Picture 1 (cartoon, one colour):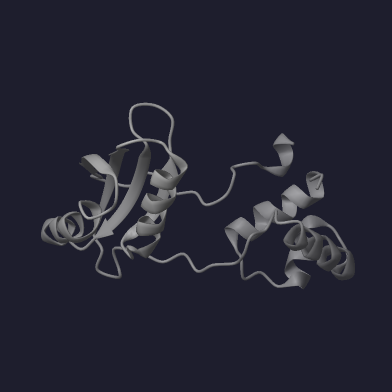
Picture 2 (cartoon, helix red, strand yellow):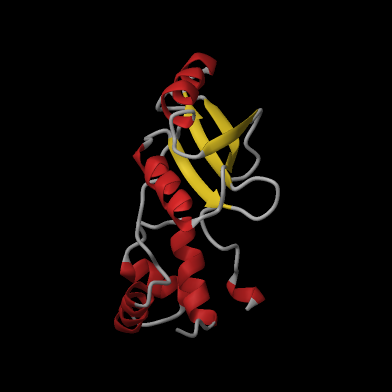
Length: 157
């Protein structure tokens, strides 16, 4: 799907307020409500909009620690990768996981209540995952920015 300036304006507005009514969204981007609704439906059907979510505060939910974990596996065979990825999906504390190029095979972002909780996650989950040969953990001191969108703005298209 080709995304134009109006689509980008819709996406930008929804990233700021995903609960915005269609009427408010249409007014904000300069469309009629029906035209805005059609564009929104197309953005959803084409997969540009993957879903709508509540952004939760890990700190407010008791997970005050963010840990960035670099993982090395014993190899990059398809079976090795798929077995590791299946195990990652079962761990509720893993917020994101990326297959990487470079020194490490994966980078994980993990939420933990505190250091003792991370030690539990490390022992019960990370070291038990298949094909893991190296785990390197870094503890976030402070979050500076956490964007969920692409950063594309209508005026930069």
